[in-house]
Length: 115
Length: 111
Image (tube, rainbow over all chains, first blue to last red; front, side):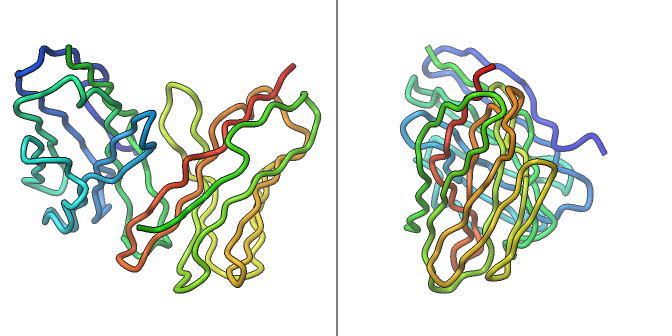
């Protein structure tokens, strides 16, 4: 298995532009999570999906952020319009279930820089 | 908001030394405790998922213990090597089973 695949690895964009981050979870994993890593807040959960359905988006910072999962093998996190304070590393992770017994498998992350 | 605390925040040890660090979590409604290893420029990688009080898990030179009644887990590294240098995260699933991560212990093993 190739693991969780994220693209792009790096994204540099100007303030106000739309940014789309992509994720392919491990096949057979029913749960997909989007995390953001910053120096100030560490790893924070933005949103998670179960069987392609968004379950909890309370971690999404504001309306500029949206996430979709149109099918079991693909998810996107979109920021529109982007702002410099959105600069961070965004991780996608998947797991077999959400019961807490299954470890998360993380992608390599997307380092976003908004200038 | 769950309080998952790790100590120390950072640690420098000499190659060959053994070391340990702590994760504390709410002792009520315990479900599981995760440990992850996060090397610089890589992504977090699961080490252990622990579910039973008194559990002890081992992976090579790394082991972990769990005390659910008092709400703590220890991670031990025996005979540290430079390749063990990483940030070690613990994570605790709350009632909704979403993982809350601690801020991590950054370990540097000096050759």
